[in-house]
Image 1 (cartoon, rainbow, N blue to C red):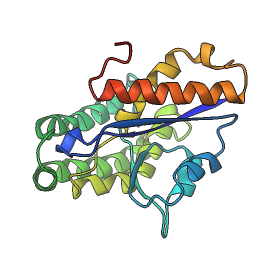
Image 2: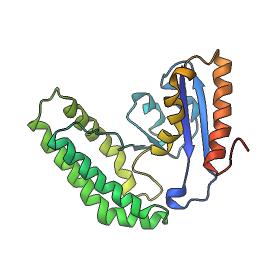
Image 3: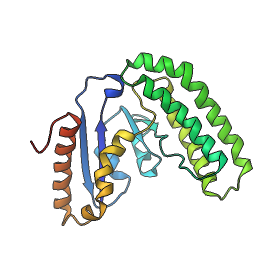
Image 4: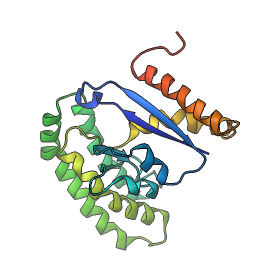
Length: 212
């Protein structure tokens, strides 16, 4: 059983579209589900590197913006710490420009973020020969390098974010209560749960107490 979440939240660039969370329940995690959910949609989609999302993107389909939030976790080595430090520099800029107009966000990113981003990519390529190719950190570097081309659009598009943490936050209640959601009784029960969560989380996003 799996729950998918789709979130629209434009507060980072002072967008005017209503905030909304939408949940869908399926019996498995096959990639044809998100393709079906977003059939006909041709805007941007922030997504992680899960291969099941690949069918969303391409000619006459949605545009991909990768997530750089979890490409590295603290693994103790000096190289890992340096990678995290470089990404933290990019996040510091994002914190500064949150809430300003998209064109201003893009201009600042071009002037300040792009040099850091480019240097990060070059630095990651340089680190791979220095570590065991089978190590977990080498896998993290290869994953990061695979995501960087799909993350680049954020540098020139102020309507994009550096990550998909908005969706990550929306799915967190399911992750925390996974053992409870795993047995929702039936496919119908799972769908009812998704509808309830859509209403509750959308209310919360818009500052409405769902229990009021």
